[in-house]
Image (cartoon, rainbow, N blue to C red; front, side, top):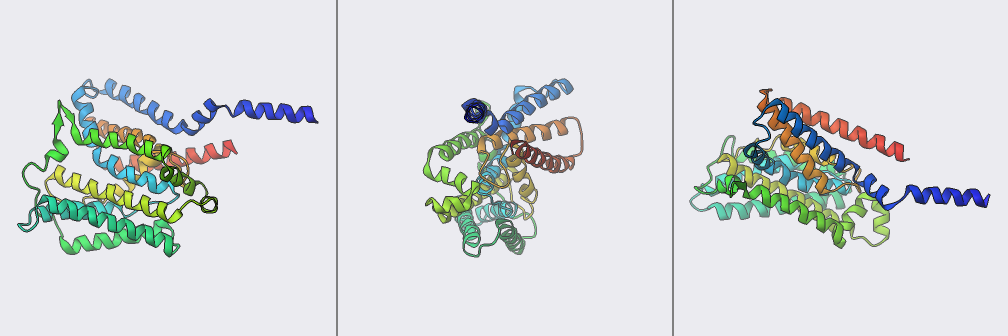
Length: 331
């Protein structure tokens, strides 16, 4: 009997090597990276202009807005929550940025500060309602999104104002042909990844998402974690709105409408589990580029742009199904 137990323990240790744990935890990241390479090869075969440096830099730039909002969404989902107010907040941020920047009593500096302050307030309200009313984040943030959308429609029914000269360099500025803002956002992803794995608060985010009750028993300050992730998500959405205002020259009330679904897609495709506790921002970043490159290829071959939404929806369904299957196999 003891011999059988010893053999079982040895087999368990053999199966649970550091390499196997690493591969299991990062399987989605490697899979998405492989898909990105395959897509690049397919695109190159379909058009000799697809893999040029100029087009790849355009993909890098076009991914900026999605990358910003998906960064905040990743942290919200890692806690087992979700932020469905980001699309409306992006619309609010973009419209207020151009509207206040065009105001003689405002200016772009005041506009940016006002948007960031509003974003922090929205995040605090979202996190506070989740904590103190014990309401699921999906309901809280969906309601907040409706409030924000109604408020910005009251402010303006159409494009509001315009950004000042030079403000568009936030979206189009380049250094030696490399998009500056897009590169800063990518560096921000690596900074957040380091923060998540090497700081106490970052590890607490994973602990709350993995087992909220156990995390609370071990002394994790759940309230601080929840408030942090929803403020962070809201600020990322606010920055996305500012970026889009610079990109399009003005904001409008429905500019962020598609970003709610779009922000969830790369998070799930990148390997972050919707129930929380597993995943990370690097997988999200790779998935952002996968989806941006796919959209770029769709435009290259002349497929109507509304198919991009179909692709996003299918990507979420497939990713969630694969995650569920992986859990069943592991069990």
